[in-house]
Length: 376
Image: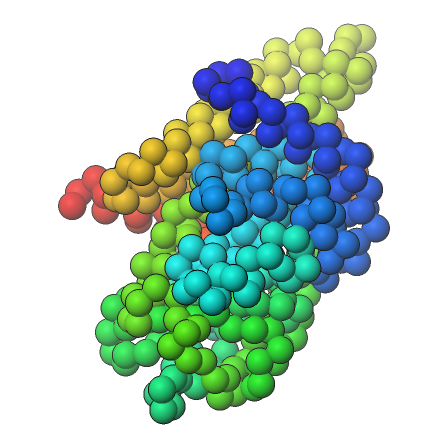
């Protein structure tokens, strides 16, 4: 991290997170049930002040750089802890940032303490990369609406206590007709089921059978929900890159140690030029990724033009996640068959690294965002 001018407060955050994840969170995560929300893990994050430190409080807004530093540091030790923090932040940011006073006062203490699990409900069976094609309907009902339809690929579903939900309030208007709502997990008409995924994270499908929402549940403006979603992703996309950097760094650290220790043809494996060059490529991609992530986070925190923030966020997520895939694949190659043993660090990372190239906008979507920013 020395290649970027971090402040003393940021360096202290890294040290604090390193201590918490090593001594408290990683042991808890090791006992987690795959595919389910680990409430004990999220509660521990709340008890140690990590959720409030990273996600912001009434006195202090969320910092993109703090979020990135925390996610990178967590990922180097425990991807389960990293993902739990990230999902809590992604799910809660829309209503903590855009919700009315009553919404914020109701949910902020529970979210920051870890007592309430949050989820971000945007994707649908027919609206993944094309987020403006949402079909979950918000049908007018007196002074409010009733939500009818389905969401899928929703992290923390169906176990979350509160959801940021994006629904169509005006037909045939794509992005201009979407509204964001806060919906309690126990709302009448809301149900769901788990999905069995390659990486053992809690992901599920939600069904909305006339779920009632009111004007007080609107996040931002009616028909302004797409902006809420995009501003949320501008904050979290660089931190997906930070997650990728953390995983890649863990893979590189393990590979350097392995190649120095492993003997081949009478010498340490690291002394073979082809191996040395592979390590050099891995390290260079990680450092470039880290700098892109930090630059995007810094632009967000400095209040840069939203178009610049969106472009930098897309670049950071694209390059860092693609580079992490390269690094971890190379690490597996240099370790050989042992890296494919169930329970090996690299076997775990190999499964974990694939999804970030898809969620919060696939790599192809990021390239489209970047390309359009250059030509418009």
